Length: 342
Ligand code: SAM
Ligand code: SF4
Ligand code: SF4
Image (cartoon, rainbow, N blue to C red):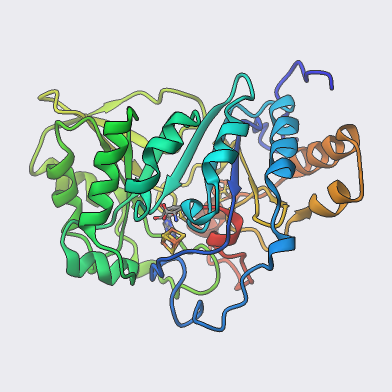
């Protein structure tokens, strides 16, 4: 297949395709209230049957095609990606693709066991989600049988395995885990691990999100500013979603992701590939483009690429801008984040 010489741009807003998120499973061992609330994802919830889930060789083929279209960063996510059996084998396959930075986001519960194998397989970047340092709040946020201690042990194992530049994602919900902001910042100051504080978003259709549940990034920055002097750091690549700040005393960095209060749709460079091979140009999409059917029907790379290029070029989505700047958005059935890939 020929290399595309120029970045693939969307006709509207001229957004270049640079990032691909791949959801490798729609299953998870947590029931975070903001993502997979237990009332909706209970025992009788129908997860995807195995033959609907993209196989490793199918993911590899699609990933290679995306890299030819300009993608330079691939993030494995889910659901909980470490639940996917032999995930390190997929990492091994994807890490052979030249020019691409491979990353993974995990809830950390299985990381202690998997960190070394993931690193050995060629994974470079790792983000671990952790919403609080005290067990009661952690349980309240994640509704899981796991513990803070387990996630911290996973982070330690990742450092011991050789991962550098580790990031910790924390969703901050007003009135639920606001105190975690300072706790997490204090805990990771000087450790080399960068905490990133995320505004609670209205992803999916099950978490009962209300605008009042959102603690805006401006308030988060102000709160941390009462404890430590912070200064902004320029983005290190175009399309970076986190606003970066560093401690003036040199004790490291924190990040803020203001997807609700300061939307960044016009710089959105991401596509998402769902567990069953559907493609989405927006986290808040209501439907996607099926790539699995043509892939399994034997379509060649050129024809598959043409589908992807058309989808990207025609994308007009800018949900967060719409919701925040022009809202309210009419109710619609949005795809769940665990399936589409967070
Ligand atoms: N299970 C893995 C994990 O939790 O890290 C990967 C998938 S999860 C969907 C990816 C990221 O999305 C996590 O950092 C999680 O906190 C974030 N997330 C999920 N629901 C969210 C919401 N409603 N608002 C903001 N971030 C959310
Ligand atoms: Fe699972 Fe991650 Fe969603 Fe929590 S945020 S329920 S860990 S997929
Ligand atoms: Fe991109 Fe959609 Fe998020 Fe806007 S709302 S930044 S278009 S994923």
